[in-house]
Length: 483
Image (cartoon, rainbow, N blue to C red; front, top):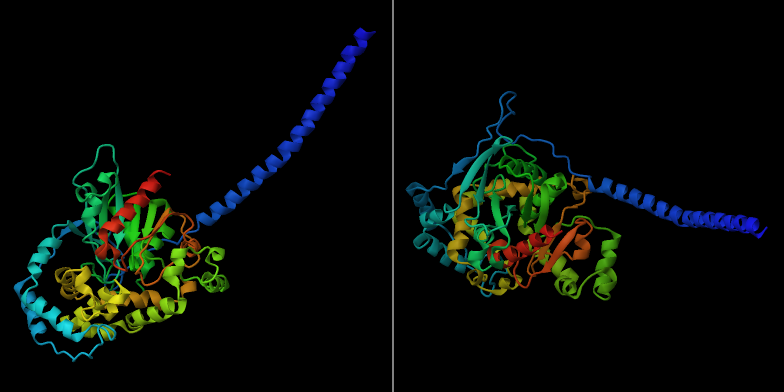
C-alpha cells in the first residue's frame, strides 16, 4: 500500500512544484516582457526623433536661369592665388590718398578703431608689407576650385606628409566665419608630430572651403543663400572628393554651417566639433535658469566656471553684446550700403575688419590705444586677412550672408526644431562673445562627448590659439574613435 501511496503522493508534489515554478516564471517573465516591450517602444520613439533631419534639397546660385540641359562640370581644378604690379600700385595709390579724422584723446578703442594707430598700420601696409611674399606663403597650401550649384567653390585640401603605422587618416572639413582664418592651424592637424602634438596619434586630412561670397569662392548671384544652402554645397563638395564619412569643425558662421550639415546628413558626419554655439531657443525655463544661476547654479546645472563667465548677466550678455554687434545690424539689413564704401577704400576696410580682431580676441583690449592687436598677432598676419577681402572685392558679398540668415524669424527656419545627434565636441573659449553652458547646449546637441573650458582665447580661436584648438579637436576625435 505504501508502495502505491508514495509514488502517487510524490507525483502530486512534483506536479504542484512544476505548477508553482510555472506561475513564478510567469510572475517574473510577464513584467520582464513588459519592460522589454516598453524599452523597445521608447527606443523606437527616440529613433524616430533621431532621424528627423533637414531636407537636403537643391539650389542654383549662378547667374541667370539654371540651364535646362547639360550636366554641371564636376571637375576639381587646381587654383593659385596671383597678384600683379597693377593691383599693388592701385592699392598703394589709395593708401597714400587716405583721409583721417583726429582721434579723441583717451578714447583708445572705445569709439572703434583708433585713428592715430590706424595711420601707423597704414604706413606699415604701404611701406613694409609684402603682399607678394604673403601670396607665396598662402600658395604653399594646395588650393582648388570646383563648380557646385552654378558657382565656383574655393577650398584648400591638405593631406598629411607622414602617417604613423597603423593609424587611419581622419578627413576633417573646417569651416570659417567672418573675418577669421584657418591658415595657422592646418599644419598642426596634418603634421601633429612635427609640432609636438600627441606624437601624431591622430592625423587629419584637412579640407577648408571658403564660404561662397568670401575670399576666393564665387559669390551667389541669387537671393536667399543661407547656411543651409552652404551646408548642402559643402556636403556635395565632400562627396565629390570621395568622402562618405568625415569630421566637421566650425566657429562663427562655420559653427552654424557645420551644425546644419550634421542636421542634414547625420549618417555622413562622424563627429562635430565647435568653438561657438548658436542658441536661438529661449523661453521660461531659460529665464528661470538665468535668474537662479547667479545664486544656486547647481540647481539649474551651471558650474562655477559657467557662473564666472556669464555673470553679471546684463553686463556680459546684453550690454557687451550690443556694443560688439553694431556691425551685425548693418550687415543684416543694408549690407550693400555700408559695403560699397569698404569695397572702395582699403583703409576703411582695414579699420572695419581689424577692429574685430581687437575686442573679439580680448574684451579688455578696448582700453588700449593700439587695440592690443600686436600682442596676439603680427601686422603681416592681420593685413593678409584684409588683403584677401580687398583683392577679391568680397566684402559686400560676405556682408550679405548676414542678411540672408538673420532677416528670417529664428523659430521658423528649417533647422530650428531639429536636434543634433552626432557625437559633438565643444571648446568654450573664455573671451568668446557669448558663453553657452553645457546644460544649455544639450537642448540642441544631444550627444556631447567632450566639453572643454579652454584656458585662454577668444572668438578667433584657430587664428589666435591654433595649438589649443588643435589639441581639443584631437582629444574629441580620439574619444569618438574609442566609442
